[in-house]
Image 1: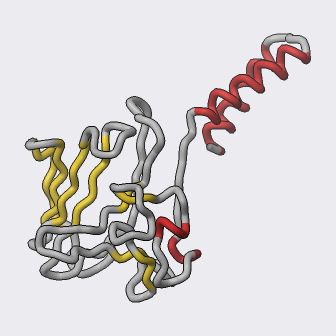
Image 2: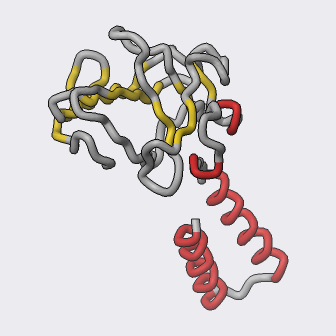
Image 3: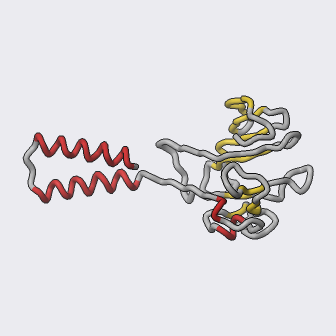
Length: 178
C-alpha cells in the first residue's frame, strides 16, 4: 500500500508542478486516486501466537470457519504450542481416520477474485510419513468450484493441480518448517 500510494502522490505532485489547477480540483483528484487505490487492496493476516493453546481457531477468530460452518466442532483445528514456526503457536491439523478429516478449516475470502495479483503465504510442517493438503476455491460458496488443489505427498513431492491436470510438481522439505 505504501509503495502504491507513494507512486500516486509522486505522479500527482508532478502533475501539480506542470499544470496550474484550482485547489478544489487538486483535492478531489487526490481523494479519488487514493480511494480507488485503497479499494483495490484486500489483505488478511493471522498470528496464531495471539491465541491460547488448546483452543479452537474458529472460536478465536471469526474470519475462520469450517466446511460445515461449525467453528468449535471436530472440523475445527486447535491452536497448539507443541510445534511452531514462530514463537509460540501453530494450528495442528490432522486426520482422525485413514480417509482424512474430519478437520476442514476454511478461510472465506467473501468474494471471487478474478483479476489482479493474489499472494498467499503460510508456513507448513508435514511430519515424516504423513501427507498434507489444502485447496483454493473458485467460488464464494464453499464446495462450488475447486480452483487449485495442493497435495503434499509422504515422499516429499508437492503437486499443484486444477482438477485432473497437474500444473506443477516439485519437492518440499519433509519433517521441517517451510
